[in-house]
Image (cartoon, rainbow, N blue to C red; front, top):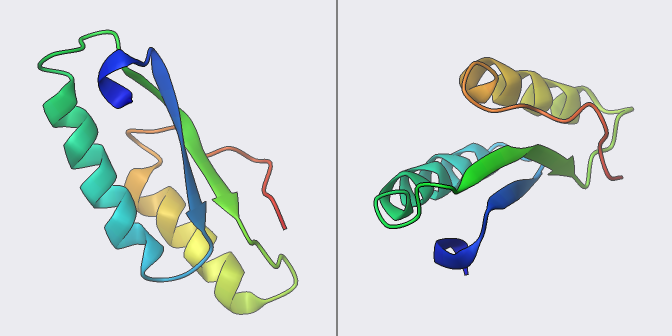
Length: 79
């Protein structure tokens, strides 16, 4: 599906192991760009975000610090 797409939004849960999945998906997207140069990452959308917990806030900050310079991190989250 990514080979035929123009853009992608990466949904991820506000959990520590989700960062590993983001890294793998970004690597996959990099590889697919060899065949589809128009593929663009719109951003990362954090889901299952419990904004009242310190753990979820910490994961959000880690995602921002690890990927925020390469990919937009949407301000909007999905609870």
